[in-house]
Image (tube, rainbow, N blue to C red; front, side, top):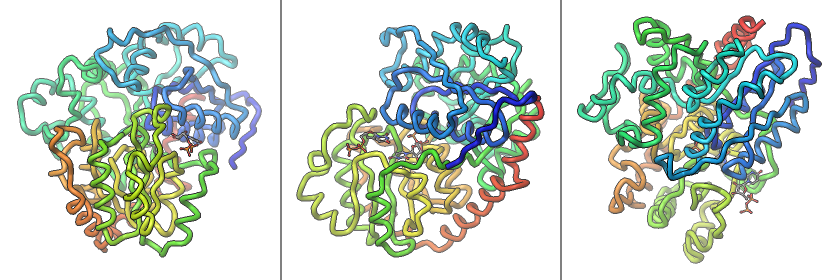
Length: 465
Ligand code: UDP
Ligand code: UDP
């Protein structure tokens, strides 16, 4: 376990971190915090209570016990009337609650001792956080928890909003492969959705930040990072875009979920396909059943993490009820099916895992790249098709585009036969394994001594001093 118990030093930069809701947003923040601690920063973590999911509060507790030197600052939010927010997604409603409470941040942050050098906050909070901290004269950085390719859309969205609705492809930045309309997060195409409103309001405020940190690296997204390196040609006043990734699984994340690991220990090298759609995607029962059939037809062993509800607190039904008892018994002959939190960062690094059926949440993509595991991309919503484009372009995975968004249309249930076929293709494709291994090396280079990630952190710490 990492223990960095440095006492406060005279030139030790003090950095506060303000994540928003959901594991996809919290995870990169806590991995970033670990990096900052290793670079001798003093870290304050701003948290809201209660967290939307149980997993978030457990993750925060584990982080705080691993790093007792971190200060936790409770941010008490104003009550949000959901009927005023144009969303029924509990995670997005929390983003909005933080946004509407942001004016309370200034007294909270100015009370910190020693005084803060910088605040790093989630991308969903830009336009409310910037005015709230203006009087504090501290540096402010955005952590963008998705791909650099998605950032190209985010940073240009207000200019392109009408084209996105009208045109088939979006030529976002010169030098960057155009983004097809079909890849754009569906909520961005709904003019008054909370998501579209936040992006429209926040994106023009980017020039007011000191930098944008993205959890990515050259070996995975050279095209987009190159485009941003010449940022003056990209967008007027864009601050530096820093590729601080890969932000990888840390010691503090390890839990006591050893059942899948024990099972993997009994399997042959590269023989298992790991299937998970992240922390907040629940598939329909019909689609789950087809995934099960697909796995039986895949000719591979499998480790399948089933999720039935968006928020874990509500995910109470047992596997038997969700998948069906008889079907489950049949599946157990060839694989392991679980319906609980697993330590994905660890599982993907297991020698037995040879492929990953993933929704392409960005953290999942980074974790697969870090471990050199080929991906079968099956985006389900949000930024995931844009991330799947990165997966496909980098050669680390396959993407069957005809599968569409999950829940797009009640008729669109991808059949087991088709799923099994694509899994066989992924598991059998030598070129994917070679490219995934190459990207793993690139990830290790970026992360290691003298790598880009280390250079970025050194640069930031120097600026704050
Ligand atoms: N995760 C995990 N165990 C699970 C489900 C998810 O460790 O059972 C982790 C996963 O490794 C990743 C994060 O939760 O770090 C999910 O973030 P991602 O961006 O992949 O997708 P999201 O959940 O935001 O859709
Ligand atoms: N959980 C978590 N982190 C943990 C332990 C549990 O996020 O360290 C969450 C997990 O997402 C699940 C719920 O808490 O939805 C219950 O977890 P448990 O592993 O106990 O699952 P059970 O076996 O009770 O279904």
